[in-house]
Length: 342
Ligand code: SAM
Ligand code: SF4
Image (cartoon, rainbow, N blue to C red; front, side):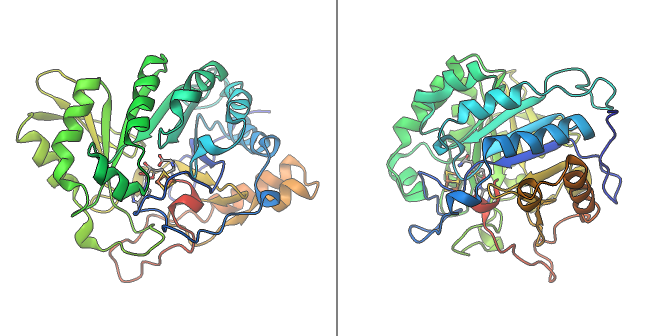
């Protein structure tokens, strides 16, 4: 079959599929989950590895999708995750695709809170994982416990070291910045990244928290984040982000790069090439989408790949120009970050 691009109504070609493998998590970050009371999806509703692989193969082989990121919830709490990684790592972008990775294996990545990496990162690498992003919002043990509701800073730091030692093609740190919670540590986190030789990507706090405490005043803007770092470590912009969500800067002293994902203050929707599959097989064309397309039913009712593909194309045909955060017509999605897959 010849690969053809999956293009949305605004001319954006879909290249990146985010797959949530579970809605469960071993942390309870305040900007994501409530302390208690999350209702987990029943096991029967969660896609099996075979079902995930089928959807992933369709995206890669039919549409030239060249990047897959596994997320959650916390993806490493899904049993036997390396088995799924090994299945997905065999996917090759079709040689006739317009993707820059045509003819090569897909770019396979994972976003994790890092708490279990000491135990599993080598197995994930051996299974074919290429890149990893580890979340770390503070270097202070008490603040870490306040923000994640778990006393696990040491394990996460050890997980970062294990990931760096594992020889993956890229290790990055994700840090959500919330005013009043950890904005006093922007510089410390940037310096931690410089010392470790990993890129820190600061993320503007988004209205996807389960407790609904997001307000615009808690968002620390990209401009402010960059100004605070540049005041101590001069930066120059790295041009051409393309479809990647982070804007990037280079330290003028040559000690690495830093990124910011400015979802709220400088939305990058115009270049968005992402779509998402939730752990229960619902297909979303935006983190903030209010409509989901039920692929699970198609995967389980004997439908052919053509039927599943038709549903995917119907969904992509509804991808909107961009989210409306801070505008009067913004509607918070019913599901929150950990249920969608960040
Ligand atoms: N559990 C994994 C982790 O924390 O890295 C993967 C899933 S988590 C939902 C994916 C990313 O979303 C993490 O980097 C997390 O910090 C970020 N995130 C969660 N809630 C957020 C929010 N309300 N605004 C911005 N980023 C958020
Ligand atoms: Fe769990 Fe990640 Fe959400 Fe934190 S951000 S509660 S680690 S899913």
